[in-house]
Picture: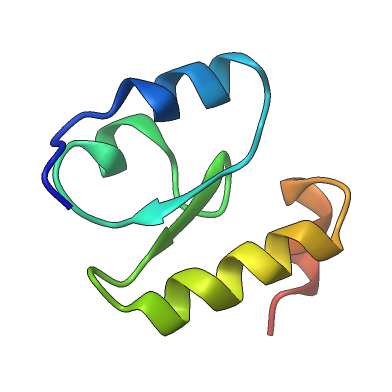
Amino acid sequence: MQDNLPNTVVKSLACGTTVVAFDIGGLPDIAEHKRTGYLAQTFDVKDLASRIQWILKFDNLENQTSRES
């Protein structure tokens, strides 16, 4: 909640791993919503948890975005 630009997100994207994070601080500048990750509503832990589960269900974000309702 405090880190404005976490390096873990940069490292995750460099490895090709999908990012799930809150839409706050510098994160929207790093992770592109529904392209390289999912940015949950700020401090909405239910949204964050549901998107982590959703991401884990599918192989990659490209397939996930086409299935989102």
